[in-house]
Image 1: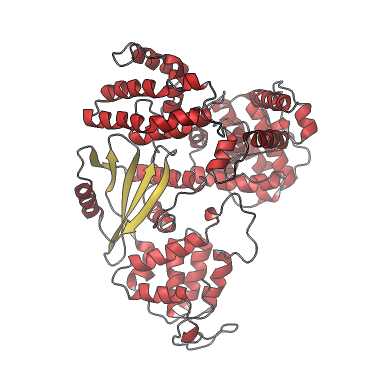
Image 2: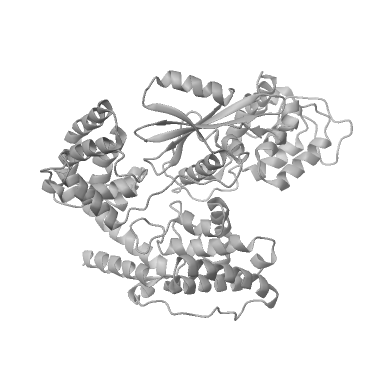
Length: 583
């Protein structure tokens, strides 16, 4: 992909020191050839798609979490950019202009702008003025009543009048992640009409949504998808991700993401009682009902009345066999209970009978394989996750031994080693004043500003244990790298990152944890975007001497001093359970 040789072009009128002339045509690389063809195309989408694909190939998000860190031979934008700057050709000028246009890096944009001003290449007007692009006024989502996912359509008008529209498919069953996305050279209204004609479905509709809400939903779904392994891929995704991220960033800020309904124990109990008293639930074996409601409320869209053939497949062929440890005789009752609950749920939602019948038929279709799964040895829990990631899972006994070792190693790493794990207690963290010892005097004011914001968040959303843990982490960061507080940077972002890291290390955001808090609620307390906070957290982890977050997003701070009593109690229970299994 490196354009170290390429199509010849006129040289600059004056050669600049350290620059070389364009190389011979017979050494033309595919990249510059493709850029030349895209420049000659009738629509800007060709060049934008080419550059988006290039930026995707250089994006560290495409790496597998199972790979080692990339070596110096792996290209990045930082390593390739000097090459593009070095070769003075119209193709590299167009490439640089498009990269700068799609980038949010202001330093890069200024660097490219200065370089292009010194060249004599004539680029298309739309490319020169790409920064003046505007979002379409209308943002549309195309949805189906069964709610497996939404297509969000975001349009952009380019300088010169050409319009492009991005279609982003957000899958609710997979945790509201982007599963696919592409961009077409059509305005939003025209594409919506085409999609409805192709769907030809009375249960599919197009409706306008707030552009600001669309921005939040797309951004969060892209972020969540980037943490998913194996990643979702299609002919156009993630190749179109940089272009779609640029189009999304043109939308107004200030929106809200998808609503998340918190189902407490009382609400679940009330729903269970209503079902069992219904005509559909009468006579059902209710022993798996709690598990069914757990799946419905805590996984996918979070609506226990939302059932489709896809969700049936996920429940029967993955979730129950992987999550629920019980006798095969009990698990065998699951399909019949599910049929009744689907009929109850669809009646309450007013779903057409034809769709209810289709969803119930999915239970019939998958039941035989389900019954075989729950009666067969199979990986569960973390081992099932490894199997889904493509890691070979062999003999169950061998894998169980390996699982014990992995779990105990992870527990030890979370608290600072085997000795710390053995000595762990579940006493509450004490109320502590902030430790100023060892913190450089010239950063006291800035640290105090962050401290006040951290304390405010803990007082509003958490408790004194979390406040102590956050204070300890802030002190460790301030002593470990005082330069972090000398550089320019918002105090609220640092405070949010401190609280988010402590919350993550204590599994605060896990839906089954007690206490439990949504990450977006904590970050929303500071009025910030999740991407901003997680990005800042990387520098804070480095300053604290802690390892970076894993692909799963897990944070390990390496000391029980940052863990609240409930988190340490769970670690102790897991420690004792898995150690007993090895004896």
